[in-house]
Amino acid sequence: MRVQIFRHIPFESAGHIERILEGCGIAFDYADVFREGAAVPDGRDAAGLIFMGGPMSANDGFAYIRAELEVIARAIGRGQPLLGVCLGAQLIAKAAGARVFRNPEKEIGWFDVHVTDEGARDPLFRCFDPPESVFHWHGETFDLPAGATWLAWSERCRHQAFRIGSNVYGLQFHLEVTPEMIADWCGQDANCGDMRELDAPPEPARNRQRLLHLSEQVFGAWCRLL
Image 1 (cartoon, rainbow, N blue to C red):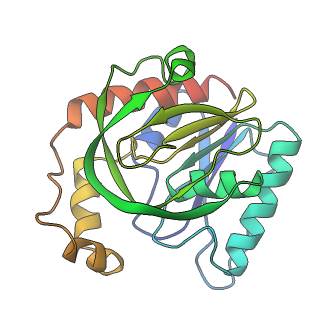
Image 2 (cartoon, rainbow, N blue to C red):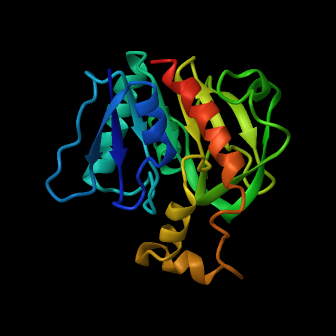
Image 3 (cartoon, rainbow, N blue to C red):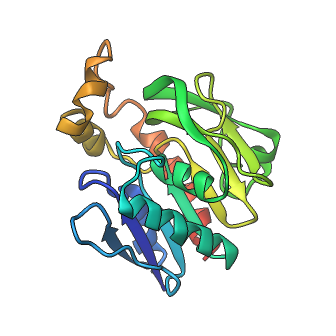
């Protein structure tokens, strides 16, 4: 069994998701769609598709963004399991016909996420306590796609997670990050504008043990859908 992971910038890899896939005996390949001349795989032969984050927008006119939206729409149509994180969630929402737009304020750092009633019953999110402090790094958000189930929210951003059908999930927040990843993101040139807006950089290891547990529960449950 193999999963295709779509990566949009070199430093936003799958983090804890890699380890959880390996623990489930699931192979994975990265499609580095941002590289000049890189092909965007159709993904139809994969057991599932994962779309990671990045500082670009789902509304950008990059050829690979347009191609990914088509890949996602076709995958939803054939009932293929999908997982989107941050930008990945916005791409899934947009491919499913929803609007992606600037959030009233950025969420960068550790913020509480609350599950909805449906989220508390969801196979991926029923492990969440009310609330959970998780890591965020985004300036945009999305409307819920038609027919999607709303799973989680925060004070700054209403739509934090959703499900389409039984096996397509979008998460606005980052459960996959390790402390090392957070520290690296804070030093990346692509994020320097965001960093200048903060009073202080996020603490990389602030909630590492709980985030590790949540990632195992949430992404492990998604792997069981494959």
